[in-house]
Length: 173
Image (cartoon, rainbow, N blue to C red; front, side, top):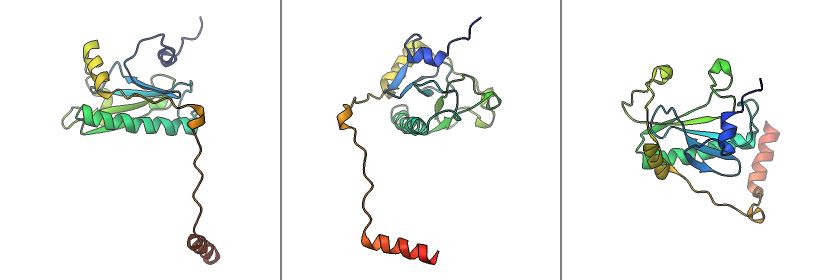
């Protein structure tokens, strides 16, 4: 009996349907099929990595930037009062799927989610029509940039005064 294919990798490869709200060359974000709240979104790297211990730092940074974009969209379009950003790594931490994923969970006053006992939260059942409406509201289109437009920023030059004070601080240090 072979190992079961990763469900998130199947979503990335479009072998399993998902309600996608964001996609670029590094990550894909889609609505959780068992949401704690409407708009509950998962963000995953397209490269298979099991957990926080394995993910490359630049991929993790990019996921957090995408989490902020999605959070802002959720706040604006779904009138969320806030969001919980959640990630579990390892079986002991209750990681359910062995592919790194970050949860963005919309929160509203009196939404019934007890974060200290989230596993007791009654999961909101939903349907495709409702999910499609949420996708329309929070989907973020990404611009494809040609390779030649991507440039590294150079650090700015220090002024003479900044250099003086840095040296002075090192001398006194």
